[in-house]
Image (cartoon, rainbow, N blue to C red; front, side):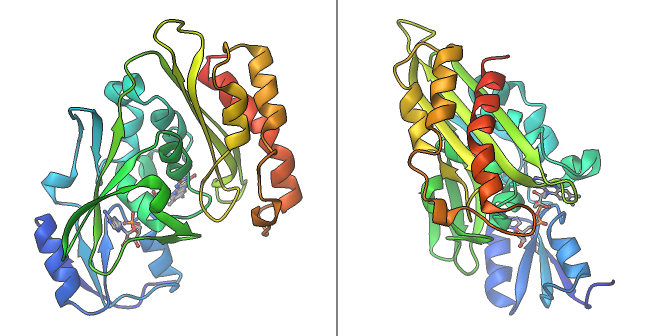
Length: 291
Ligand SMILES: Cc1cc2nc3c(=O)[nH]c(=O)nc-3n(C[C@H](O)[C@H](O)[C@H](O)COP(=O)(O)OP(=O)(O)OC[C@H]3O[C@@H](n4cnc5c(N)ncnc54)[C@H](O)[C@@H]3O)c2cc1C
């Protein structure tokens, strides 16, 4: 199928993009196009105008900040997967993004900003960013704001973004001691999205670098948007990381889950997703510690 006809506008700066979104009725941002173009072709959306932000220099790149790293909204999956800076400072992110489907074509053009703005429950960024306790930088007609990742997603394919706002960057704090990250994903065979995807970000103590200071475990594909698996986190915090601790976390994982909120759709039943939770927490933790 072909897309409905649409107009095309190119933004050269962030303020340009905000102005165009405000001025042109029924306009929509275009970044990598890897979600939007298929939706246009399937005629699930038909905006009158696409505002192309892919040429905005200030939205590209990964850089150190005073407290951690900042990733521009147009940074591609490939740049994230290949970043030594991210592998060192926030390993859960490249671990998760390397598992995105679609092959090298998708990884070369699809962006972190487009992925989280689309907010599809089966996408892989949200859980990793939730585990890493990221902050989202947003710009719009009323200026700039920084939103904790816990307040960014508000439902399946829904975010807190308001009219004429765009994501400009994602920021993640450093941890000065040892930090491990892992991601275990059960792929839905047809789409390659997550039936479940468990992201783990393990922060270790300075004095005893095998003892978990903080454990952050989050699930993609499990509910309408990514959620923290707090019972698994509690089971790990303060423990030496070893097989026994990992088993405790896997066994505990379902403990504080609202089972009524588990996704139940044609990709997988809620019962199946619930059954996968513990085993995928175990896998993700084993990947984080290199097993
Ligand atoms: C074959 C295939 C397989 C895929 N498999 C996976 C997978 O396994 N896991 C996964 O996570 N993803 C997957 N994806 C999705 C892909 O990884 C992209 O993240 C996704 O397409 C969105 O990124 P984009 O840059 O292409 O955004 P676009 O398609 O350009 O935009 C997506 C939406 O976000 C809006 N938008 C874009 N940028 C911004 C911004 N900066 N601020 C505000 N709104 C913005 C657009 O208006 C649009 O509504 C797959 C895609 C394809 C084609």
